[in-house]
Amino acid sequence: MSKPVVLVVMDGVGWTDKDNGNAVLHAYKPQIDELMTKWPHTTIKASGTAVGLPSDKDMGNSEVGHNALGCGQIYSQGAKLVNESIESGKIYSSDAWKGAADYVKAHDGKLHFIGLLSDGNVHSNISHLIAMIKEAKKEGIHEVRVHALLDGRDVPETSALKYVDQLEEVFKELNDDTFHGCIASGGGRMVITMDRYEADWSMVEKGWHIHVMGDGRQFASAKEAIETYRGEGGYTDQYLPGFVIAKDGKPVGTIDDGDSVILFNFRGDRAVEISKAFDYMNKGFDKFPMPKKPQVYYAGMLQYDGDLKLPDHFLVEPPHIEHTMSEFLVKKGVYSYACSETQKFGHVTYFWNGNRSEKFDDKLETWEEVPSDVIPFDLKPWMKAEEVTDKMIAAIESGKYQFLRCNYPNGDMVGHTGNYEATLIGVEAVDLSLRRIMDACKKADYTLIVVADHGNSDEMYDKGTNPDGTPKPKTSHSLARVPFAIYNGPEGTEIKDGDFGLANVAATVVQLLGFEKPEQWLESIIK
Ligand code: 3PG
Ligand code: CO
Image (cartoon, rainbow, N blue to C red; front, top):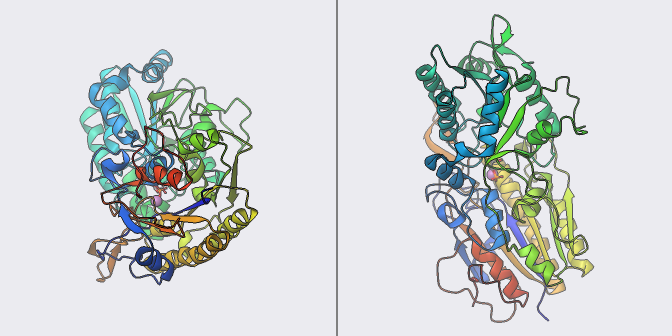
């Protein structure tokens, strides 16, 4: 009988000697250091083409990282599929594009785009938005409105004006007697609309008021809104309050009956809630009161949830991720356990299972969520590491599961705040938790795999300095490789020679569990 396997994902903990504010390198982390010296270990690829992104310049992210970990294969991901669909023009012959365009034309309505305005390539890409706006004009649509969610989390933390200016230039070029496009509303992505995993529905409610009803503080332009808020509160982009663009006191682009709405984000986690608001508005939606329910045609860039079929209409076919590890283990009758706190709960369940929100088998799979705090995480960088660890240890001690996985969000969620000191503590909280997990694995004689999904906390400084000479904080992920280590594995566990990536982990897990991997998967990392 093979030993059960525990897999820990240290979210956002990249492994590199480079020291651009490297909070991993400088954290006090005896456990991680032990794993990466004394036990079989290596570093693996977690960004670019190794996880299905368009190029090796694309940093990794949790969606593509957990997809690869959970399915053992490299699928072309949303960022790449949308690029291809726009390049070939296929997107414009999709039922959803035609549906949205026809609906607007039939009702003399407006075409709205909601989404993250940046080129971060994690949730969206502004180039996709611009291409669609140009096509809309070509197809005879007269009115376009953009509801711009400001990023500063997948791109430099105060870069919003660059993207706003880029979009305003496009409108300047296109606007004429037949066509009028403009920004209608917006706000920081961590304040409105882009909540995930039901951590805080009030963000989506705020977004509904701002985008749909035009109910919010008014400004003459997005630039004015950003500059005013920055001057008043020192806000960085991701936390900028919501704003409505208005002329003579009247919002320029509320969402009304006869309009179409396209959510141009391709990534699902932060697109699901706003999509539910639109798709389920007349089907018992009860997450917040909706004073206005416009009759619109709603489409997502992709289908975000393969189980819920959400949204109904979508422009580009998502990657259809098959032969996942969960499905494989269920077929073998293996009991498995998954745990994280809210912010990453869907990462170890929904992303892990190929963007499916439901289990393959209720009896064999157990999922436990620890509710996250609703606070900026640099205020409490240890987050819920202790509670996640308690649950993992109880699950190990129960003896019920052969495969257990969890995600510690600290390196990533604290890393995204740009606060270096807090991120050191975040990494240290993960390290402390690892000691407890390692001890539990030793005691129960389980194999432990420790890995990360992408870098973040390993690079906390951006290029350049602030006017006072201090380093500029970096809030986005990094391109770093990630650590991979096996603790308390079977006698003779040895890492193979070779260059591996996240998609090689699934085969490693099932090998340790005593199974032969499915033919579709990449090879195991161990001999
Ligand atoms: C976010 O959604 O918080 C960031 O854009 C990406 O972070 P994640 O990929 O680590 O979730
Ligand atoms: Co992240």
